[in-house]
Length: 451
Image 1: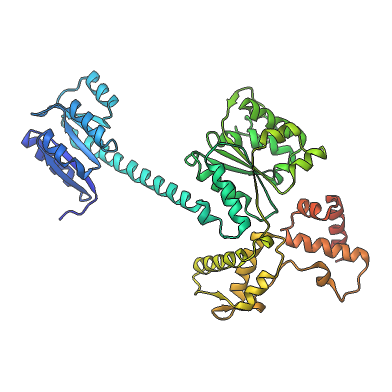
Image 2 (image 1 turned 180 degrees about the vertical axis):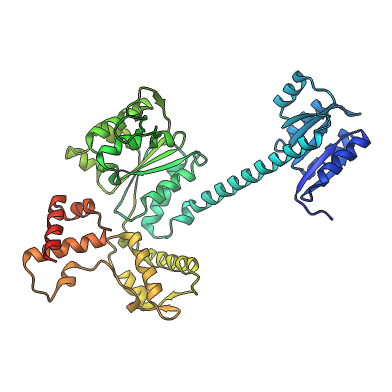
């Protein structure tokens, strides 16, 4: 018995030609071929939903055009190939307009043509199934009840706001400390909204050098500046029809803010070095660890852009305010790490859980993930003990207690610890310590010269 899942119905009233088509198609063992001699018997069996139907244009009880319409009304996804003795262009065009996949005349090369057409259908079908599977996986991944782990009261409020954001196209501002999961929330908003099949494009404004920011967002034409060897499509164009996630929105200089404001107001951009006006239509989700309203008051952020972006604000609580979510997340990261690395199951001891709950996590979820992954590696048995847990960030005073150092040495040590905590992000460390970046560079140079 042929168990192939790719089914082809052959509808042909001429017995000899019907057998020829069936024989030709059954040369491929992957095909299950079923033959019919009239339209009625085909319609009675249509509930089987074949992938392809080859349909004779002239049948004893109906014609191909009428039967095609009936098939498409019941099962529009079925690919119908019309096979006819006539080669009139007008007839073929009309049938193609009505939904036929292809039109093949009964000539000596029909075997090759039929094989090629069905091969193309099958390849396209496999690709489409893969796309749908990936889309389903993405939607499942960013179902915020699954992807954002925890059940604390502060997080439940976040879930409620995400749900509100998914049912409209209102602008969204996500704020929270570094490492709280702002991009994950942005993806949850996008992939649970009506734009889920359109692009999601993320750009971290703090990671783009000031002189390249305009080109990154709006694109550039070939020769627009030194090194512009080809046309570059910017993030606004890439996100057209979908969602543009602007992370660390508060880090932009005011000149760029003005250009973004114009793009949002006019719904159009012009690439750097170009004259062509490009229409854009994308939802903006912005994120920042800063208080943008305070930045407006301080003169660092344009008031008009703030109110253009202002919409639904989602505040992400720091991990230290989420209570037992810390343990829920820790267990999730442990299970994930063990699975990815082919390790046996690991569990947290009661004392290890207490140690995790007693820490402040300045690096938030990102830091917790690193801490528990290291703990898995350090643990000897199936149970993770307190001694297996090492926090990369410790209280600065405790870290340096018992050592006699000059004030300069204390300052240098503090900067080194903060750089370690925040992945050597000098800009972020400068903000955390409320000092200039030049001060950090100077102290690092002094440390290097001393060593």
